[in-house]
Amino acid sequence: MSRSLRRPVESSGRRRRLLTALLAAILLVLSACTDGPEKRDGAQEVAEQFASAINDGDFEKAGSLTTSPDDATAAINSVVKVLQDPTITYNAGDVTASSAEAHGTYDVSWEVLGEPLTFTIDTLLVTDDENDWKVQWSTGLIHPDLAANQHVEIVQNDGNTPTVLDRNGQPVLSEQLVTVINIDPAEVTDADEVATSLASALKDVVGSITAESLTKEIDAADDVFTVVALRSEDAEKVDIPDSPGVVHNQQKRLLTTSKSLKSPVLAGLNEVWDEAAKASTGWQLQIQDQQHDVVKTLLERKAAPIDTISTTFDSGIQASAQQAVDALDEQVAVVAIQPSTGGILAVAQNQAADAEGPIALTGQYPPGSSFKIISTAAALDADAATPDTVLPCPGEATINGRTIPNDDEFDLGEVPLHTAFAQSCNTTIAALTADLPADSLHETALQFGLGVDYVAPGMTTITGSVPTSDSDAEQVENSIGQGKVVATPFGMALAAATVQNGSTPLPILMPGEDTTADQEPAAPSADTISALQAMMTEAVDSGTATEVADITGIAGKTGTAEFGDSDNAHGWFVGYYKDMAFAVLIVGAESSGPAVTLAGDFIRPIADQIPN
Image 1: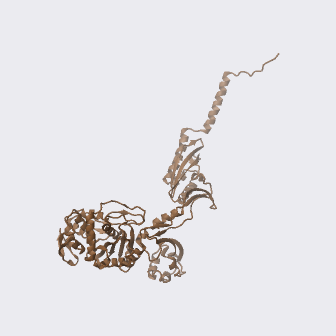
Image 2: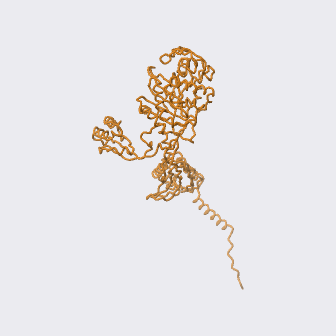
Image 3: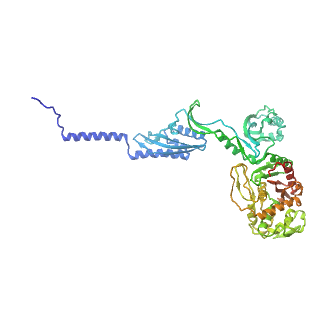
């Protein structure tokens, strides 16, 4: 007889008990792995707070949200300094949390020296002893590939330094090695001895430095100061004394290619050169180990070699202008512009002017009778007269309550307008413009560039200001370049360029770089331009500027501008020759004569070099 073996049949009650126990065990396990919404939301909030603190640049707060606040804050600050103040953005992703830890991500973007870098960081959050969430600190929070004992570094690639060229391809600016002599007053034991020995050593190359001036500087100084930076050819001639407090070293600096070449307009090219030099070298953002060996290159900007930077500057024209201004003791400035292109050809000042800053480009002075270019244009445009209209030119006239004299009260009787202009008759021009609208001089000046604000890469300039007249008397004064009218040599050269060109050219120093203007006034009428050209030619041929009549083709307008107590005056001469417009200002010259003389001394030696 056989038997079948069978398991005992479990009762339904026992099965229910087993199922309940199994479900309880599963729930227990799940509760150990996953927390409720409040716990998860707390981790998410801290993760987002850390991102916001980084984005706001509050690195101390960001560090405080980590498990190692001091280390985190120091590391983040160090990286930001190395990256030269980058733009950093952290975006926190969703966080998954348990009772003791949470996991999340950050989408990170850096902009380093204009170059973008994006990556994702996996992050861990943990609870501290007080059950508060903290971001687990590690260097991987800065970059996922950055390990402990490693750092980031920007490394410059080998490149070249560009040379600045003039319009003829001649070098005008280049990087050169100079010897910088400093004095540390804290180390000086005998100020008189140091000053005497150093001034004696420098006397053949820098005569302006004296023992007296150095002693004063040492006594007044609280910290190390630079005495002079010597070009290599000058440094070879100087035996620097080994005196306590005198220190020297060699540095690279951007300098004009020759000591004699100088111009305030070239100073503005330093920033342009710096940008070109950086582009020429390129760089890499690297992770390095403690031995500075490369672990990984994160970002790279390829070098864009720039060997030369072109300008409109003309070294020959500049040299002649500089020689002319250096011959005078008064403050002198000359600006030369090419009317057909707006290119700056030369900007020269003497040492007396340099002490006041770049007056050729930004110094504002009453233009005196040189402003009659504008006031005569306003009268012509208003049909108040033609060049041949016969008008009185008395030695003195009272016009709208303001008494106006001519220079030395010369009296021409009745003459055509063109003669009154050429002879610079104040009484004629003032009477002619007295009844024009109050804004006529302002609006006409804009047509010649005066009062327009130009932004030209590589240089900072001001043209001047010709306000709307507030009274009849002010209108009379403004019409002869006094009153509230002021102009810079740059602005008056631009006005002369307008006469020669027919419209105001946009001034430029760097070909291919766009100049912008805050407004675009209409050009003067062709008839007005033609009349001014003829009158400015007459001013040279038979008027107030006959001293330069031997320069065939030159045209211009003289100006004497009173200032202060009216017992002193500036001298102006503005005009054009071939394709070069110019303005000459001599501060305190008392008359326009010296300015005319200087213009001749400037132009004659280079007449063949001036563009046609």
